[in-house]
Figure 1 (cartoon, rainbow, N blue to C red):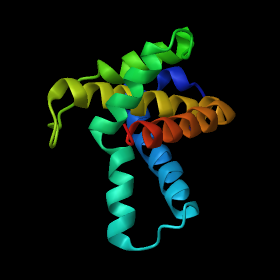
Figure 2 (tube, rainbow, N blue to C red):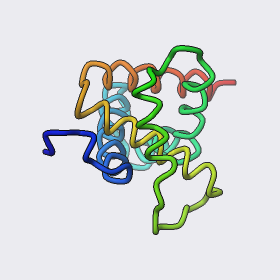
Figure 3 (cartoon, one colour):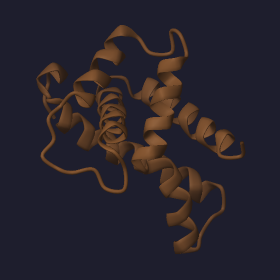
Amino acid sequence: MVSDIRQINGLALAYLGDAEWEVMVRRHILAAGLTKPNQLHQTATRFVSAKGQARLMQAMLDQEGFLSDQELSYYKRGRNAKSHTAAKNTDIQTYRIATGFEALMGYLAVSQPSRFKAVAEWGITYLEESSHD
């Protein structure tokens, strides 16, 4: 791993954050007792889709003081990164916000594992509760 996280570009952090977030989600849904492959996939998609990640990121941004200035800068680094892949099943704005979320999660996973875990658990709870609305 790179010793200085500031040298990791936004898309690389998003790549890592996407994987770390998905592992947290998979652990959560398995702990909830879901075992059928289709059930697992359908449930996980609510959390790991660009739309779900963008909703979660917007909720974090809407809560005053939820993110530190440093965390906000890593989110923006990912959101503003020039990606050469196209958004699947969503608009470009949602895709970019989701990429920013993934970059933030990658940053936290590398630099502050306990904060990563706390944000991930908050996010899972938020998406579960908001899906009932």
